[in-house]
Image (cartoon, rainbow, N blue to C red; front, side, top):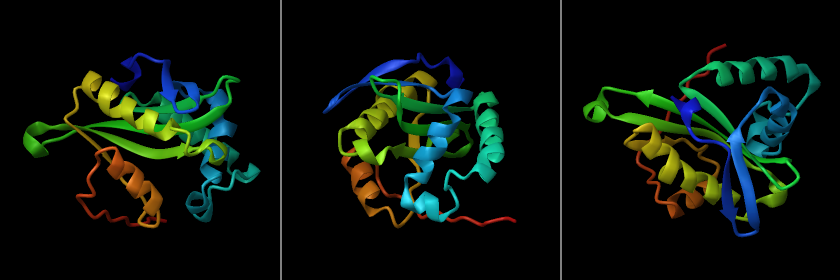
Length: 170
């Protein structure tokens, strides 16, 4: 499944080479910091608070233990986490039994945005991970307020084809 992807791998960016690897429990604080570095995520409660550490650790363990999921991090030359994304392989009946690869929670540290890290991450997903996993469709959702992200994904060949809905429970 996802854990069978060949990692770590180097990714070339406009500013140099970074490394994409599977996340580990020791990446927890860096991951929470990346999520809180984003204003939309912070507004939803991802504020890297000490009160949330246990819940975040439990969530990280659940993702890492699930063979249909992988949480990836991008590290720079000093091994600092500068990017992340979650991949989920979803077998399905629609589209003649197509299997999809869902990309979620794509984040690049604000200090290194526009350096090509996000593009390198997404190119790896579409050019390497998707074929290796036998998926026929890579999909993602993006908050409607993320207009810059929408332009970014469109430049990479993604098409805004659907309207998503969410229902908060609890």
